[in-house]
Image 1 (cartoon, each protein chain N blue to C red):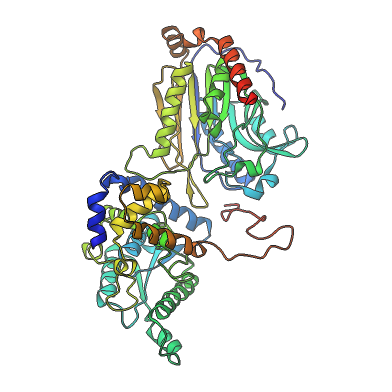
Image 2 (tube, rainbow over the protein chains, first blue to last red):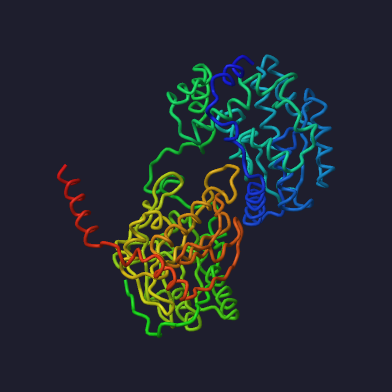
Amino acid sequence: MAVTRAIRRSVSRAGRDDLRVNAAFVEKVLTGFIADETRRAGARRVVIGLSGGVDSALAACLARRALGPRGVVAVMMPYRLSHPSSVKDARELARRLGIRVELHDISPMVDAYFTGDPRATRLRRGNKMARERMSILYDRSMVHDALVLGTSNKTELLLGYGTIHGDMASSLNPVGDLYKTQVRQMAVHLEVPLAIRRKTPSADLWPDQTDEGELGFSYADVDRLLYLLVDQRYSRRAVLDQGWPRAMVDRVIRRIVRSQYKRRLPLIAKLSERTVGVDFRYPRDWGS
Amino acid sequence: MRTRRATRPIQPSRTKVVLAQIAPALGDLDRNLALHLEEIRRAVRAGADLIVFPELSLTGYLLQDLVSECGQQIGTSPYLQQLARASRQIAIVAGFVEQSPGILHHNSAGCFLGGRLVHVHRKVYLPTYAMFDEGRYFAAGEVFRTFQAPWGRTGILICEDFWHLSSSYLLAQEGMEVLIVVSNSPSQGLDASDPPVKQGSWMQLAGVVAQFFTCFVIYVNRAGYEEGWSFGGGSCAVDPSGRTLVQAAFFESDRVNAALEPPLLRKARTAYPVLRDEKLDLVRRELERIAAARYDG
């Protein structure tokens, strides 16, 4: 990508190591988080939509360490156009982890819905698939006395690269404060199979879809830019002065702003003296 | 605030302190009291003289609207009375939501000694920025005071108080020999460092303050999770020369012991008499001048 080359040339001051994490501490915090919050919710296990990608693979490895093999149920939910390797790699990971797997083909439900609407866009079909999967995960969570474990990483959350009430929905998200680059580092640490780690990131909603193709920049680059803008609180001017391309900076900032609604609960029109989420403020972990 | 000087004589020998790095349940005072009493029993069996619990150890941290429902009135609270009773066997420092007359709520830490609550510190600096929202729920304390304990003259600070050097400075000028810092410090910041970013900062501050004021520093943080926050643990005790006596685990409940040996204080204060040489009157004059100039515009 031309953008990538330009950035590599001009941005030399932002250390390449900025995004590295202490993997042992991160593992300890995240496994503790999964174990503790699952217990507090009164659930016995977690269900994870295992896509064959690195984010859900990492979440599954963490959950396996936190809750043991019987504490995790992996759910594979392919659509008829999903890449064949998705199910194969997910199944192989589940086998290695010794966790239970379920397969639910979402093609009949999705195709039935769009039967009368053949001109529906790819985006609408992709959103429908993501929400179909969410709907299945929440149903399976009741069957297994489980919580739904989320797999959206920090890059996706900040860029709004996900479907609201679809893949962005979950009860607990252990990987939501890790950039994609950091997810990859953790995946190495937790020995996620190479076939999954080497794969080109994709939502796999239509053939040949890739995250980086859709976004227009690589995760390696955008993660460093997001790290400067969000974590290091750099202004737009400061990152431009560092040599980041204006078009990319503005595109990223616009995405963050426009997707803020996806990261919040619905707005409630305030009427009474005490309104849920406004001035009725109690912790979710109340009494646990 | 009811405080009372301890009547027990100064203990000439070492004081054994337990740093109780617990993970309280959020808003469940009964469960937390039981957790305290269990830790206290264990410390008594181990022959400890003092046990220190973290900030808000009776309630947990992210209380939000539960603050007003968790408030305890000194003198009538059954929870505080139980801790006072337990302190006949061992001195106890614990944190709670204090409801003062006038229905103000404070983030307070008390020292229970010989069957009584002998000292209460109300958190002065309530962090209300970034991930913190304490100023929304709590009223700020207005004083820093030391109190006499069997192990020496003692000051208590709560979390953010410790990040203002003037807090420790004032306590030191009043004769503090032992500084007890209790916190609910969450993990914040992600990089490759070991110890983790935030916990490393706390350890550095404890070492620096111990050396600045040649006093023991006992720092007790909590562990566990609330609302996705992970509390970092890493409690530690530092001697008056800045040497770490003990260090608890990160990100998990733990229980470690430290011994406060009087010769360590004597050695540091003899070798580095910085407190003796402090020019309190100069500081006062200069502060008055700076404050006057600031308000004169």
